[in-house]
Image 1 (cartoon, helix red, strand yellow):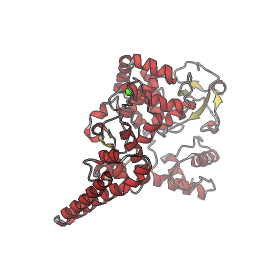
Image 2: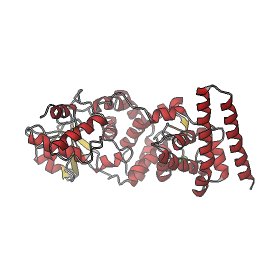
Image 3: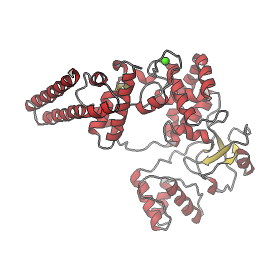
Image 4: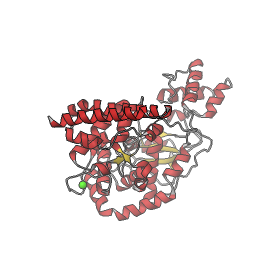
Amino acid sequence: MPSRTRSTNRSVRLVAAALAVSAALTVAGVSEARADAAFQQFVTGFWPQAKKAGISRATFDRAFAGITERDPEVLEKANYQPEFVKTIGEYLATAVSDARVETGKEMLVAWKPWLDKIEARSGVPRQILVAIWGMESNYGKVLDNPAVVKSVIRSLATLACCDPKRGKFGRSQLIAAMKILQRGDVPSARFTGSWAGAMGHTQFIPTSYLAFSADADGDGKVDIWTNIPDALATAANLLAKNKWRTGETWGYEVVLPQGFNYARVDEKAGRSLADWQKMGVKRATGAGFPRPDDKAKLILPAGARGPAFLVLPNFNVIKRYNNATSYALGVGLLSDRIMGAPPLGATWPADMRPLSGAQVEELQRLLAQKGYDPGDIDGKAGPGTRDAIRAYQSDKGLPADGNPSTAILDFLKKGG
Ligand code: CA
């Protein structure tokens, strides 16, 4: 078994080299060299798991060729704690910038023949696909930036080896990444992605790539790194397989009537657009709802003072791409703007900065003390916490939007 002998020799050589280097270095240098030895040990120890998953020795060696140490930048990015969280308005100002809208319109024209085909095949409208492309990689512009075009294998092996929170993610993605290499869709040298392994124009992680990759141009390979039809068809496939409803949109910005009952916000079951209209809820543009029987839920992402939206089931399909309300809104709003819709009617309140995890925990504790059960005190403002806020607001005669704001936290802290 020549391949096995070669690998054993290689790993022994690598460890020996690292130890030799570490002996000759300063104290700081020694710990760095030891860290590299740990990385190499991880790689050597990972072979049986890879083999079990069907990876050949040749693929394994090709994957790790020239990769002998962790990528410290990956660990830095994985553990980055922003000083403050962006408000949703700040996030959307970048996500749905005028420049991004204009480029999106150009892309609709430039890629029309392919978009015709992909839309016909998947049932997902072109503007949603172009918006995802814009959100994920700024239409491929980020792929020119060396800082975000890292070796997928090295990034994932770094997470697998050395990040305590993402070890499991790193290992499963690393196996999927080697399967992609083994399939021959992309040569090792072009096998690049973000620090977390998100790849190509539409930023798929390896497991999602394996689940949804689509060969739009029919050349027998799926290349989401340089082939835009393949990248767009892969995004379309993800949405289609997650039950995109052809003919329905993602949602509408709406205006609520005076004295609106906020108990209707975040309801679990949808109501028909016709029912919402009967309650006085209108589209912000003043136009009617083109499909009054479609079901929708009401969300107020920044509370009662911010824009309101009726969102359809496709909103949740977009969240399968990235499970964040702000992201799905970004895709939806960008897709509308690309088709010529005006900007939002309402403005985002500038002071609605999302609470930090510690602040949410404090909010949960105060609610619990007052007898409003927020569920687990975990620093995450999920449906239970929002319901508790809503019940509390309602009892205090406040607009019961359920929004975990600094205002409601301050109100609780002052003993309200
Ligand atoms: Ca192809």
